[in-house]
Image (tube, rainbow, N blue to C red; front, side):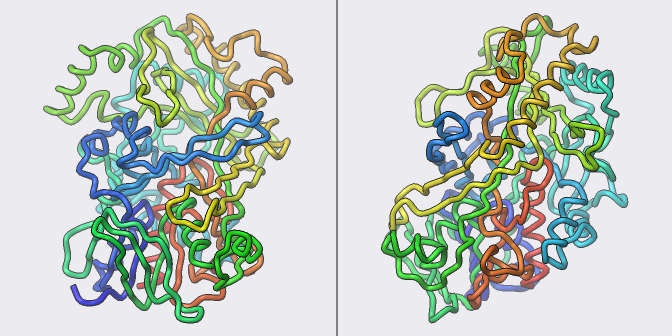
Length: 529
């Protein structure tokens, strides 16, 4: 390939989409990924994310700083380090957000990012099981699977329970309205995981992909980005191009900018990094979705019996190998939905998850693997859609090998605590419905004795956890003091430098963020093409 016209740093959800679209349009693209190409079986088998959750070959396995609102606990931050990024190791739930999310982006000074423009990107990228319609696209690169036909019987009981609790059944949780309960759609194709890499990256003369190569610093001439320095297996390398796009994610992108002298001037000076552009918002505005759950012992078999025994695993593996279906072709997040915590809320503000599986998490970095419980069980969870707390990410040292200092600041805002408490009360309401109570033998965690508001709050601070949707750390907006890029994705104060990944989200969307992240790559290709 001739000299690249665009360097894309990071082949994750947005970066692979951007590089694929630009190169398909004739732009010469160099795509640089720190991780491997992905020849790893657990990134192909959909439910294999139970293995990649704690695998350093394909996962950065970051940890946060101690979190005051959680009693000083830290939080695990898995991020994909492989072609496809986090879309190659996530739980595959396809959730686009609701139209008001993007109208909010637009109202914050970002023309071109309202629902009409965003929906056009979604329609273009989708190859949806439900077919082409006003709501969905067909024939696009990303296949979206409707799981309603293959859901576990326990998941069907959850959907029935939600209806008994007053939530309407939704046959399409990405339809005109996301309110209601139903079966999650997932990014798989013919029983295999559909990451952004499998969807978008094709061999073509206009696309060069370099893997196992970590970008360590941006190169500037004055305030113009002209290339990158990177560490490859054979040693340091330099790549140059007239445009550089950072798609290293909500953790990697702000850290790379700070390492390169772009960020809060006082922070950079304190770390001994020469300031190229004083950009106060780099690394700020960190948002994420927290989740809180109730674990039950069930009266009837669940996926624990399939995935928790050697015989069940072998049978499921053989079925997947021959037919590409069965438990290994699914996600454990099978059911769920969205609802309003109070009737006076204009929009949904809480997400539900149901998993016909229970398990104990081993601390990442240990040899112990995550294993299903040895008895039938299931889990219900709530996740507030629009958290109010904000965190930040910053350099821990002026060295690309040093881990980032991640400060999620969860539960700093008392409204977030109140939302989790109300969510737990709704889960208990679900458990009392005829459909779900018939399945429950025992509430194992937190236990029925945890019932007062004070006890539920203490339990939330002790047990709530991230569902791994970090975003916002290079916020898009018109003001260089409070945002990092404009609506054209160009970095404020720089030339030739752009950001396209979840770090640009002005505010987190309702639901899982992989689909909106790929959409950002699609939209970026329009803007940069």
